[in-house]
Length: 197
Image 1: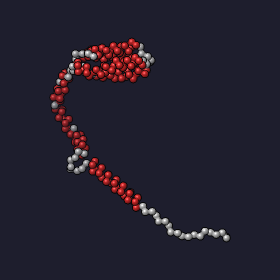
Image 2: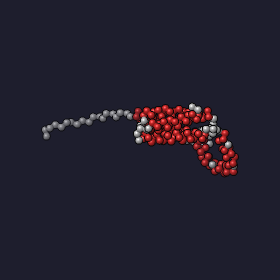
Image 3: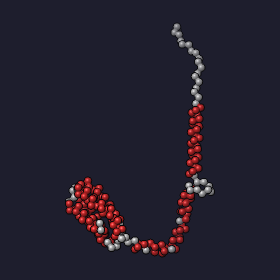
Image 4: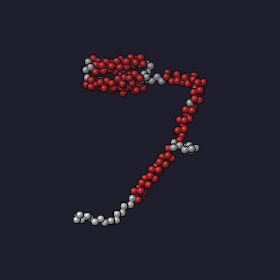
């Protein structure tokens, strides 16, 4: 027991650092968040009687569904006038060959280039080009031709679409025969000649 034990002395504790800066920062951020929420609520929530651009779109859809039962009874009394104007425009919209040529010339000009690409790649790698040409053929089919060339146009587009289908089938199994590519070229050239390209 002769060992000496260290002598314990009480010393004052170091003062704790003041954290008032952190407290003010938290209070400031909370106030800023409340201000932002208040501004957003002010801007986006509809207000009572004051008509403003924000509240009028929400009022319009709610008024439209309630108004739909009323208009449905009105058209039932007068369907004949609405059918007559609808029937008259189609005969008057027969395009000229020049206007129709302008509408379809892009697709018809792209077709020979696409067929050149197919002839160069001649294999399954050329299938995306055939798919693009088939989409163009669908657009050609959807186009409204002038009545003067309507029958020839429909037959020509049908022949072109058929040749593209045969070309796609041939390419998916390997190289397409030259005759299949030539048939597609002939079909598209007939369409180009029909519209004067």
